[in-house]
Amino acid sequence: MTPPKVIFNPDPSYPDRARKAKRRGTVILRAGIGSDGTVQEVCVLRSASPDLDESAVNTAKKWRFKPALKDGVAVPVSMSLEMSFNLY
Image (cartoon, rainbow, N blue to C red; front, top):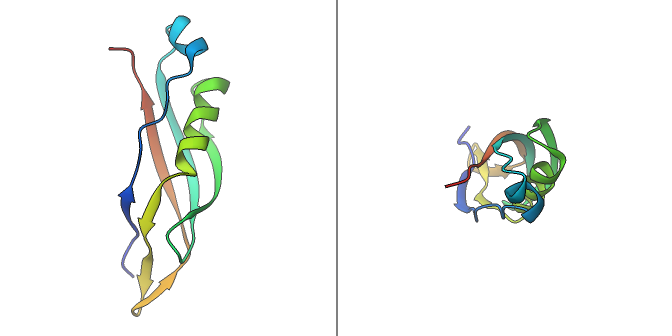
């Protein structure tokens, strides 16, 4: 099996509330990647805070992948995604 490869992965937006509160962290997501390379479903595996989690989930839904292949055929898979929020 060939794993999916990300082809479009915009950065998450930093929510104003989180920025003002100086919240940082990494959100770990489980994403279902369809055979068409789109993100079908997303759930939070490790939370940073509700507003950072929401931004991460919304951003993950915009990601696009070259789909996973099994015997040359595109197949749906599940994988982990990580999004970090750090103040610079």
